[in-house]
Length: 164
Image (tube, rainbow, N blue to C red):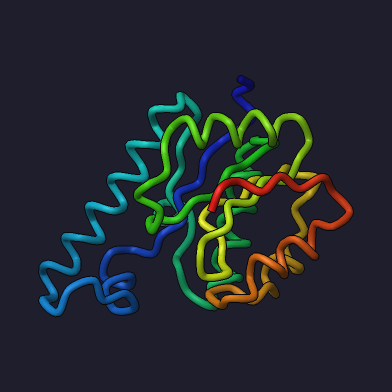
């Protein structure tokens, strides 16, 4: 695999995430569960041998979700990477093999999309040349129309859907 591929773990800081996602009625338990999810996806990503970057280290996490994601992707490409796999902290079933396979497809020039069961996505893989900041920023993030909109956005490219 080429070192021009990186993995971006896109997740808000724990305090912000806990304010938006309630996994438990107890605040401390909720923060701890989100911390464990972050660590799980980070450890899984590190098992691939690719560089792993965290959005919390790259951007201030203010503004819209799409704006934050676009800014984080720009920051990674600004560090010299040519391909990027983006995953959130809400995909605990994701494996290092899933990420390695997605990276292989990405390096072959395909856009890689991991659809979830709610119409969103748990993984997005794209190259620097496929990235359009404004278009990505405007997608219907955090809705059940996201997967369909991403497929339409990248219709001019070969798109590989992963398992849901």
